[in-house]
Length: 430
Image 1 (spheres, rainbow, N blue to C red):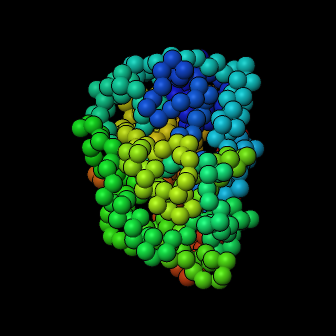
Image 2 (cartoon, rainbow, N blue to C red; image 1 turned 90 degrees about the horizontal axis):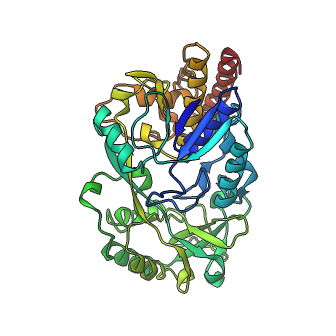
């Protein structure tokens, strides 16, 4: 019986792959006996910070390419995402409850996968540990004793508002650069409105962090108030940028907050890019300064989470196995991959590699020309300044020579990646 500790995206991917490839699996999660500070649902594979799985553009975005690589390996999360997707322009966004329900159903339908509610407090000698960035204290301490404690970074989730509380007369529907089918609701601000919003955002009271939580904030999940503190126009060149959007009268707005559907029914909206650590009352006060949100009902306030990850280059091999225990694997954000899709991908890979070892075969890491292979090598390559990494073209092996046209270069990288994934699958006998 293979034990997988943690039933988030990574653990569920690993369990599904192993369960559909002849292995008996015990998938262990402490829910519903105990919940982390960020989790509230008893279902498996709960999404916490966002409902977006980022771009779905296979030929123009590295995360979109990663998703296609995963689909070709039979990813359970990518299948569930397709069935629970909600309109989001060129991104893959999902109805979170439906997504979680679909993954939970897929796993519970497998006779070879046994779901168990238990808090594991000691690091096992073999299996897969995928307990995520909010690993409970007992197991976290066990991991720290063996591997030195790892590092910390922080991410923050954005507020969600009720759709019927948004003043639609102060919005316009349009996707940036005309991509998508009008999936974003845009909340424009004048120069004066934007200036007041930024001032209040920067000076608002933030939730106090515990001493153990004080540390670096990962750039990819930077709280909006921290970004705003870097300069008045920082948000206008980032989250609130007006580029690619036009008002109904044809003019370009000074700044724009975009709202994205949070669920399939469209009854709630996520404030795109507004991850925050402000106190709840301050969130309502400050975000209500945006004209369209003047009377908004906040269904969920943003919160900041402590995230923990291993110093993976010292601890893990490129197949996600521990250097001191070849049948003990780690998966998910604790390995130093960052993002929902990247986390799920690492779980899928851990499942594939453990399946190989169960059959008495050596691991074969995906080719460096694939996003799966590039991320695998990133977490294991010597790096004194190791930090979490998203899927991006910078980690992919190139080898084409100089290609000036960025779109053409990315298209060729994607075509090569998918060809190499198919070749790798054949080598593994999948």
